Image (spheres, rainbow, N blue to C red):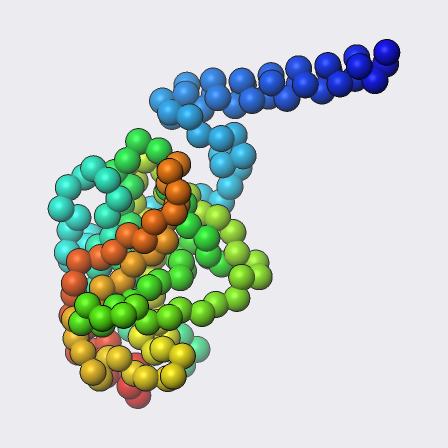
Length: 189
């Protein structure tokens, strides 16, 4: 009899916790967001203007936002991308840090360059509805596993990121852009 009472108590507790999570999400966000996601690492939203702005404010958009030169010999040049969440629910991606999701780079509309990375220590980062996050792609994303330097063979690129929504994970791609000459010269040195 005690086992049945304990089972009923645990079931009631779980249903109550789920209900509180759902109600609090609706109150705070106007949508359902699992309570565990509220404890997840949040992305900071820097002030950055994309050089190729998203076409609309609805949906998920990736835009090229310029580049940063290496500040010292321990850094590498990076391209910046703005990921905008114009949906009504949070989106997420897996990465080691909020600024470094694994990219998928395509040269001249060809086959994507494979990206390899270590899965140890990755976490899930969230971009809340109506906000944007600035992410960076290093020069290493432009070299495939055969060490081919694609910055010398082409200038038309797209960069995409796997972003997870309530309906699943999908690759979201930037518009085509050209690498800045300064970026190419800084990574070839």
